[in-house]
Amino acid sequence: MDGNSNCHDNGCITSLETELIQRLVAQSHEAKQRAHCPYSKFRVGAALLTADGKVILGCNVENACYALGICAERTAIQKAVSEGYKEFRAIAVASDVETEFITPCGACRQVMREFGAEWDIYLTKPSGTYTRTTLRQLLPMSFGPEDLQKV
Image (cartoon, rainbow, N blue to C red; front, side, top):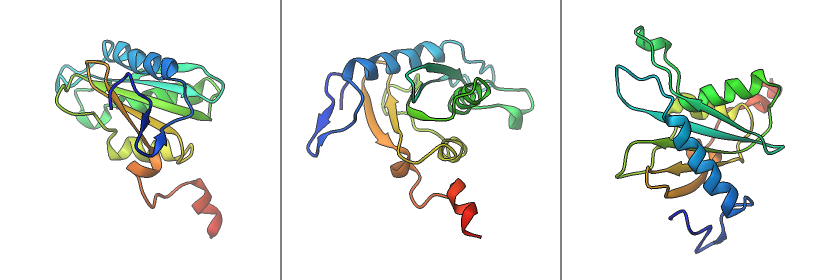
């Protein structure tokens, strides 16, 4: 799907307005510009939309001790939580990869899952095109906070 469309064969794909999606996609690419990735050179940006409409940006931040780096999606989520936000509507993820849409890594998917399974995830390309998926689609049969209540 391209950035000019918000419907597919099964009907409309999201409750977000096209203009809001496009702004979120653009902001994810802006966030990518702030990435600190001197080792991999793989820039990633994220724009996280809270339930009340605030957008919080994140970028990947690498570390010479590789295991201590953090992805853009988790940066945005941790910033949001530290600012008092815990309900999210959507996130857009951007990279410099032109040939395919970037997807969140497994660790980011699990961190996202902490805050629900039904929010929209916009996977983007540098051209501004995007496709939409949900966390439930990216992380089927997931483990979340409600599973701890089953014990």
